[in-house]
Length: 419
Image 1: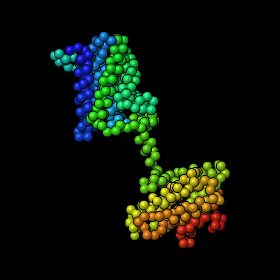
Image 2: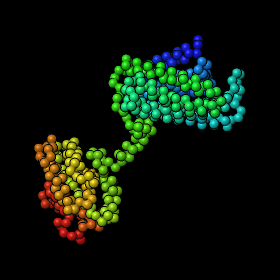
Image 3: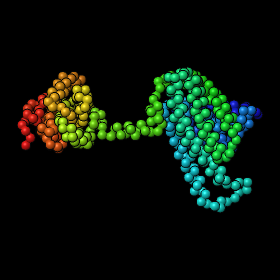
Image 4: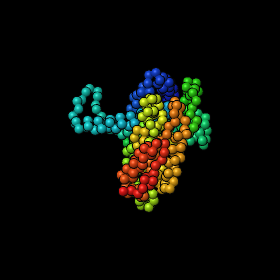
């Protein structure tokens, strides 16, 4: 069989087998697809290092040309039909597995007298070479896939939105990049001639064309659901491939109240003194409003806790929509909220009245009674010298508002100067 037919047969069988496994991922699990990719990684690297076919335009390695190009194509299909997070998992698995292989091989080198068997001679030097190429290849794969997805997304804006065209151009650009850097590593390690670079590059462009056509046909006739047309941003793709968005999401969730999404008591305890110090340095005022939902226990007792939770969420939403942009709102605890307002006086009372009126006039589906709030206000430096005293004065004003009949605002300044 001629070299060209060998490469073509390998490409057809590779695509058919991987396409079938991918298509049945909902039945057999996406992990099966990942395992097949991983199982062929060693053979792919081995063939890329030692097995070459000579064609008129240079030396061709089936491992580098067919198997690696096919792997990139199916990673792109995984991104198109699933998402960047699904595509990311096998990359990290391959990288960690290859590094582990190198470490284990290094440990075996500590044993200098392995048993000789007829016809078999352990070649740890070859294992070292393959290990280096596998790690180097996987690092390149990681870079390749980030570039592949970004280019694929950008092509829809700049060049073409045709699936076959986008896939081909994305694969051709990334495979060209990969050919340069993988050849450098391979040449330094085993001294392969320059004809392997040119031949491999031409063959990879041909493989890009073959797999692009096959993927386009697969997307047209096998999984014909609409392909995502809107482009993801470069930063979004990078974040999803590197877990950065998971870290940022975790940081964002820390200090958030689960029911309302507001900042919680811990954030208040941390941010309050910082805002007070800033007010001191700038010689401006800082007002604290303590806001409490009136008769909330009776709402829970009569209508149930799920309805009580709805009331808390609605009141939180009203306060968020009514407060100023620079004000910081916290769920202090239970049905109580704290609102820190920089440079509020003399408008703090007016703002509190707007919030109170907005809550009192808001409809509450499921209740046959209005919901009201009471608000206590204290201001630095007029009413308090530090955060502890500011909280005490605002809390005392809140209790005064409740004692006076609820559904009202009480300012510490109305109760006279601080003691």
